[in-house]
Image 1 (spheres, rainbow, N blue to C red):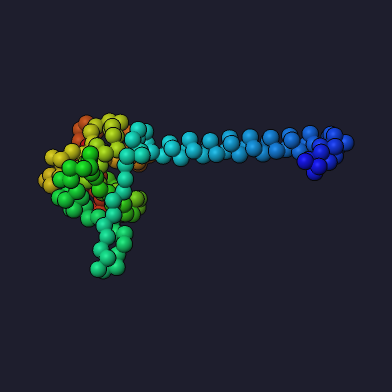
Image 2: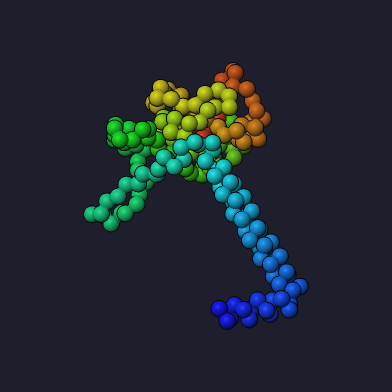
Length: 177
């Protein structure tokens, strides 16, 4: 208690300094709270409007005999094995890679993501225009593709989907849905 009394007496004699310390601490604490709130909101926005983001999980394969603790699950296994699991509401798989994409003589190298038929269902996504993938698209005679809004606006100039048009990915023609 004696030390606290001495500190309070010292602060009374140093009023401007004490006010400066209090203002500096207040600004620092306030700025930290504002920045952390901003980051939390900005990072939460990365879920793409997914209401149940806490209920979405990533599943990995493991094989202790081979020494693999965490590996990607093959897309075929997602459809064949995991979709039949009763304890999961819905299951989807994805695989990203960089490849050439284009509908003309000048292809562009971009990141593409191959997804299983349940991908957009899991994420509760809606198409801006056209439609998303469904189970009928698996094994279709002409493979289909969904393009992102930024690619559709930038590379393809917001071209309407009627009449149907195609894009070449790795030299394979795919119909844009």
